[in-house]
Length: 115
Image (tube, rainbow, N blue to C red):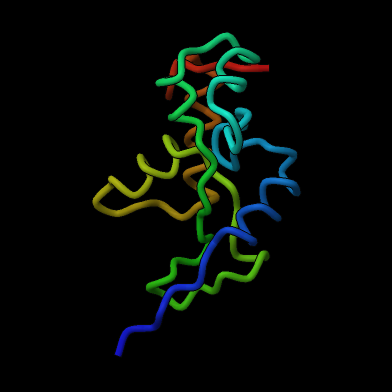
């Protein structure tokens, strides 16, 4: 029988605070509250803000036995998390972060650059 998944709400919140509200991969601020306020604060559209919604990401995948303990969960924006899991063979989180940081430093990855 498959293991049931525990909620990521609390560990995601802990990770969000630990990371000072920034995505583990692209280091951009993430949306957790009011989309209109977030959009206005950063002068972006609500559709752009949706890409920066905070999600919980397992460092060791759930299907590989990864837990929902705060040490195994990081906060990642929806865009980075989604793109990682769209890959046929997703790289490990550290390799993926290095890849994204490299692309961001060259002006690539996604077009949203917030302070």
